[in-house]
Length: 421
Image (cartoon, rainbow, N blue to C red; front, side):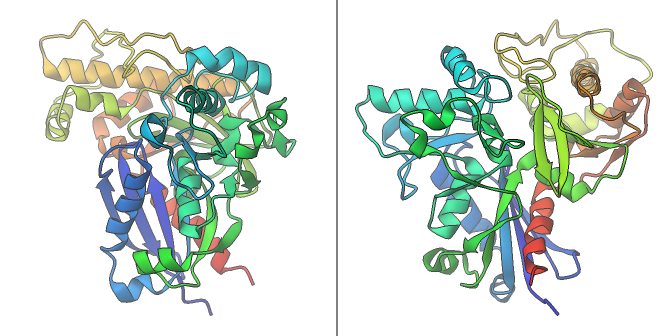
């Protein structure tokens, strides 16, 4: 009987989280921390993971038989074949919300349609990074790696691989199992990763990395997924369920019997099924611009969801949106701000609720199945007043499941490697 433990690593919008599960799937430990520096600092991802693993008992770490990593979808880094980030401005990743408007027409010409053919796609960010390298006179060879793929490479000591879901916005076509359009024919195509499906065993952890983290040398490294997909794996939705992640950004996901496509719509293959959805640039992160966590909790208790504010805010953190509309020029609408903090918080929550409703409508219009229920994950799932606002708006049951974290989803994915002969 397998007695090994499985470790899930989540690189989210605002920090890191790890979750450890036992052989029977029960969650044993979960730890989290903010990024040591910022989302864009790759060496901070290593530092953060090392610190979190250090919180686990030494004997427990030695029992970890497999691990998997998820990351923010679209956060992209230019690095050397040995994983070393580039010099100067190239040493930082471009975050998922960084729109490269000047590269969008070139990306669209290369990729055709799909999530890579947009200013918000990773392909536009890749072109921006490659242009920066040329401008400062730094020659190749280079690798283009998303956040989860880069950290997975660090675990392996081999940066060859990329997980398919993390690379859809770079131009990987799931149905054709190849790079879209003319991407593979570009002179820089050697920078692209070799793609493996989510859940594939990539190899064993590098000896030096195992020693640094205190893990067993035989620990298997499993191809992970995006942070939103990882949350879905944790929630284990049933037929007719949609999943909303109320984190720093607002993410919608649901399983579909067939793939669907459209600007801003993501279509992944997870657990043998099609998983479709979209991610807004707006989310609970905007609330922290105006209120502390304690204020949000206190003010929320005073909200009466039966009394709408009538304000129609568009709570984007900055110009540009990915979903439910793909418009890099869309402006935020954060005012006018009422005198009452309670009313302003409610208006922001109503604005986010409206975006969620539009998102589900957009997916259904594109061919996704009708919803019967929504399961809510993320920090916003701890807010009962927001849940009531959303349930009123959507007209279907809304359940809050804040304990279903992306790290837990990755631990469950890693555990599948331990069940294989």
